[in-house]
Amino acid sequence: MSKAALAIDYINKKTERKFHLPVSVFKKPSNSKEYSTLEKVLDKLIDEVRDDENHPLAIVMQIIGENLEQYDNEHYPAIGHHINEVDMVKYLMNTHHLNQIDLSDIFSSQANVSKFLNGERALSKSQIIGLKKRFGISTDFFMK
Image (cartoon, rainbow, N blue to C red; front, side, top):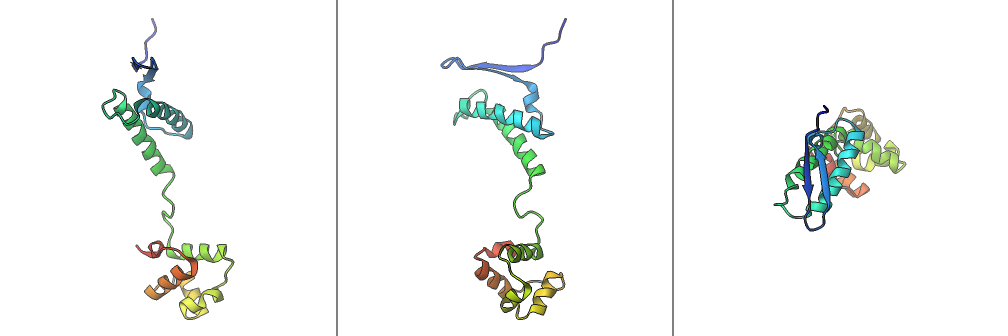
């Protein structure tokens, strides 16, 4: 005698759309294949549930969505995560094809640019404002 897998079965009486959701959909994904499978399930649930918070499958949709979000947060950190000020300035210099001397007007001298890029000196408020103006970026990139 074979064991039947535990599952949630749901039939939409209006559309006759059927859902057979094994309890494994509640498992947090541990790799990209599981993530992709759960993402497809979530897409189908979103099509079914829409904005109906009282829908019988709304809680299933919520749990899968939260599990996928947690996987994303653990495996794909937010843009700028763990990027320090020096790395940001080096990136800006590289993408704009600039040398240290090109930033000497912001740092008062090429030597000060060098000291900053070597981690020997922190950015001042006026340097942050100068970088903001030069590159058209938010000062938030340099605020901790």
